[in-house]
Amino acid sequence: MATLSSLMVLAQLAPGQVGSGRIQGGWGYVWACYGITLGLLALYALSLWVRRPGASPDAKE
Image (tube, rainbow, N blue to C red; front, top):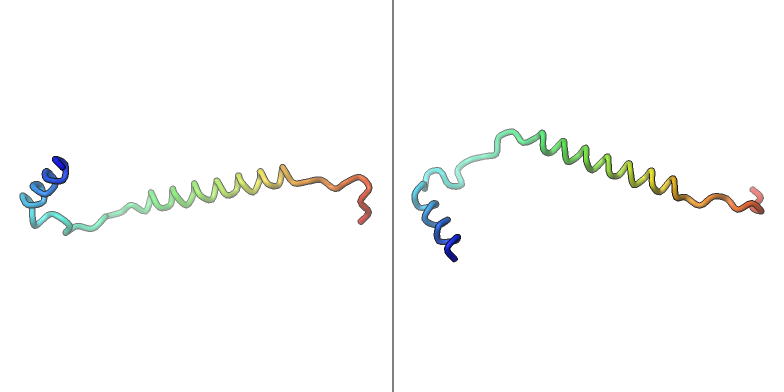
């Protein structure tokens, strides 16, 4: 409870500054997350392709 009360005291000390801002920038983090996600999906697709079952020797197509 000490953390909650200290946060409330800080919020009362600066009433004009709490919750009045917007995040500026940050698109670098968004693009980094997109890159990581696409990279992981590509690695997963590659792992599926490597582990795919081969055709049986007596299969005629």
